[in-house]
Image (cartoon, rainbow, N blue to C red; front, side):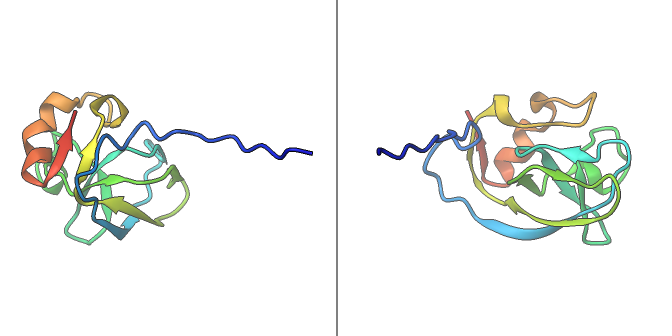
Length: 116
């Protein structure tokens, strides 16, 4: 009998630019708690990551990394990992409501996160 395997192609990774990944702690978020792979994150002064937000007065305006897996932080902080650099498809990036790729395109580029 022939065994088959289903392959799911990744729509996040766009090219071969070196991806540097790092373990991160994503802070509990009861509003945006279910985060998808490709979510654009900032790092707060407490060392925990949260979704970027152009309207924030502090740390959340700056890009830190791209979330590398789906997570749920509704109930508690989660240790996950994020891409600090790489080449990604823009349509696969996820932003907090009211924020767009255009709001962060230059900040992503400045972090060696390239968007196609």
